[in-house]
Structures are given as C-alpha cells and as structure tokens.
Length: 177
Image: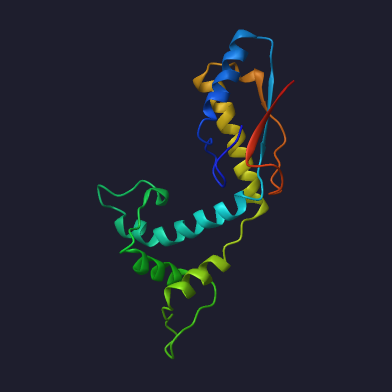
C-alpha cells in the first residue's frame, strides 16, 4: 500500500486495498498477516517541508493559544500569504542556530529568501524520524484491520520497519505468516 510522501496517511485510493485485505481476512479466519512499514527517498524532502511549515506556523499557534477557537495543534494552523512574512521572521528569530545580530546582540531580520534558506538549511530528517514514520504507517494499517474491521489482534503482526529513506516509495507491505 502506498502512502503520501512524508506522512502516515494513505495515498488517495489506497484505503480500498486495505478494505479488501480486511474482507479476505474475515472470510479466512486462519490467515495471519505481517505488516512492514517502509520509507523512501521522497519522504525526506516532504518531511523537511512539513517541518519548515511547522516552524513558521508555531509563532501563530503560540499567539492563538488560549483563544476558544484556537487550533488544537500546530499542524492545524493556517498561515495566510499576508501573514507569512511576519511569522517567518518570528520563526527565524526563535531559531537556535547562529543568526545575524545588530551591535546590541538583537537578531536582525533578513530578506525573506535568506530567512527561508537559513531555516531550511538547519532542518535535518533523522533516522529516528524515518523509523517513526515507518512505524506509524504500519500501525495505521494494523489499527484499521483490528479496530475498524474487527480482525483479532493476534492475527496481525508488526514486522521489521525500514527507515533508510531508500526503496520503491513510501509504503507498507503485507505478507502472510
């Protein structure tokens, strides 16, 4: 099953595949399934972009905190085109890497392309993050089979995950045990 690059969500049209697997398992109670999650090269830039967007949205999220209509997570924050320069600058100033300062030691805003480049240059996707993504993909499939389709948990096993960022696409592979 294919997944969106950098995400633990199914690619469009892929959920029907897991529904077919669930139906087959319901019809054959002796089947046991192994689930293996994988990452691939296209996950890395997608995860880097998501982290960049998260960094830019974080100042707005913190600003809205406590508001009754505030988003529940930073992932739900929408930064409009008009707001983007303001929140980019805030993210740049909050960053932990070395930045240009004035004679008082206060971080000085840079042109938008320079701030974007500086933030992006300091985002690194780790093997741990890739492994976590592979695991979340496997768990999504297992949860669908067990909780939504009623397959007994002892029939669905999580097998090894591959978090090398190599391979033939972001995916989960299923195998019979």
